Image 1 (cartoon, rainbow, N blue to C red):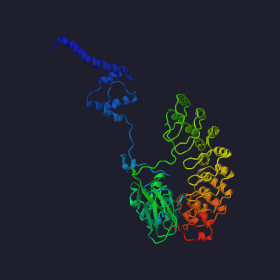
Image 2: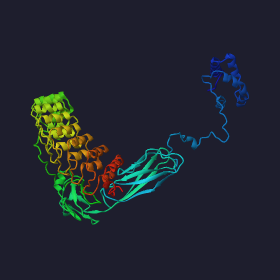
Image 3: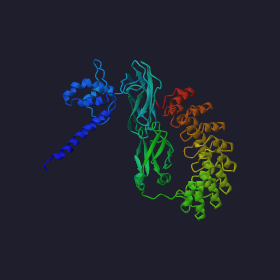
Image 4: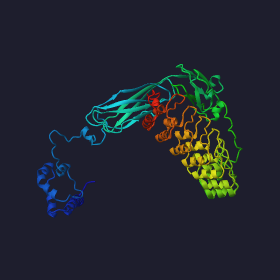
Amino acid sequence: MMKTSDFRPVRMIKNIAPLTLFFTMVACEPGDGGAAEAEAKAKAPTTPTAVAETTASIQPAVVETTPQVGPTKISKDALPERRKTLPAAPTGLTTAPTTASKAPATRPGINDVTAPLDITFDPPKLALGIMQPGVPKTGIVKMTNNGDVPIQIKKAVASCGCTTPNWPKTPIAPGETADIEITLKPSTKQGVKLSKRVTLQMVSGAPQVLTVEGEVGLFVSMEPSFLDAGKQTEADQQSVTLLAVDKIPFTVISAEPAVLAGVGGEKQLSHDLTIDWEAWETGGRRPSVKLVTDHPNAPELAVTVRRSIVRQKPMPPTPGAQPARPMGGRLVNSARAGDVDAVKLAIASGEAIDQASSGGMSSLHWAAKEGNMEILALLLDASADPNLPNKAGKTSVAMAAESGQLGALELLVEKGGDINHVDQIGGTPLLWAVALSENPATARYLVDAGAMVNVVDKSGMTPLIWAASIGQPEAVAILVDNGAEVDAVEIHVKESAMMRAARIGKAGNLRILLDADADMELKNMMGQTAAVIAAAQGRLEKVKMLGEAGADLSVRDVRGWTVLDHARARTDGERAAVIEYLEAAVPDEVRNAKPVVGG
């Protein structure tokens, strides 16, 4: 359609309106010029050349005014004029980013793990030579600081648990030399080469790596090399033959667990040991049988037993299995959770009061274990049996005794609980109280009530031997004061309460037995006294205790090892301290004897 003059006013309005709005907004902007400033802006040239020519005259006015707001656009070319000018870089430097500028600055006291250190090690590689199976051997590496600043080892990390390093904890000055002691304990496997690493993490400087090597000799061969439990009926899986390769006669002193016949007897070049597969099955199907011998180079051996996933013959029934009882339901679960209201509801609904969980634990067992007196009273009032055994043969009385729940124990005994009930392994409430309870009041109560103090379990362990091993000194004192036999020995390794206290018990247990005149010179099957055992495994405190009490420190066990030999075979943190004490305490004949271990 042809445009006519009627459209001209409309077109003019459309063209003029935006321009008018623009001028109005500019005039409203804050500034010192007001309308005059707006007029000046309107007359400003718009071509690039004109803008360049007038920038110098306009820029000061812009800098002095408050930054503009609104739709006005600022040319990018004008932005650098508003920025703060950076000073010129010094000669030889650049402001460009570099790799070095991104690296963190090294500050004093911060470890620079890349800094080389001028150190020498003698020998560069520690060779321990031929080693005995299961017997630790120790070597020394001398570390010399050839630099001009002190160095210090922060930590020494071994590549496996069989390697124990002992390093100087203080700085090593320039020119000084320090000893690093490394002990390697091989397994009982013979005929293998060992190579281990010890990494020295330095306080400042690159880590240092030491290598220690050794070879376990083949002194006693074993045929077959392992037994296969999945082939128990086959002829070649009925025995193991040990042969002295080095032609030194020896005796097999003990086997743990006791599933091998032929242990003991005279020294011979070979021994045939027959396995009792039924005893192995009922004894827990252990993956290995540990052998102790008097062979000078093979004191410990191990017979590996390969266990099959599917047994070729069924497990024998559990000795003394209890008749079937209703399996645990709401009552057992409620008692275990300590939910009194739920227990009341379960009893009211007629649930069997002596029902048990899959482990044979009844609601009364759980209440006794936790010492929940309210639930105990509810169950006993509902005729729960305090002498009902679980699958291990333990009653609620035993559970309360070993858990230290004196109130529960008193209530159960009051309701007819048997304080001398014997469980599946021959244990009694008193035996478990002195072994496991941290509350000596339960043991005191049972003794005062007439519990048997010298009962013997199926391992030949008395309450005193248990207490000396893992119990509290208060429990040991209660037993000693009430007629416990202090020199009784268990049947497997022939160890007394004092020997167990020297090996793993608390120092207070050993002190009480010494004060009770227990025999310090009794020997176990290895010919070891309490002093020998303490030197091998006990804390320094216990070694000193026995030495000061007059224990014989010249004794040798059946392998000919002295207390010093056993101390040198240690790999724990107290090894050096025990050796130092014994070297000063032993008679000259022991101190000057050729070391059997560690040298």
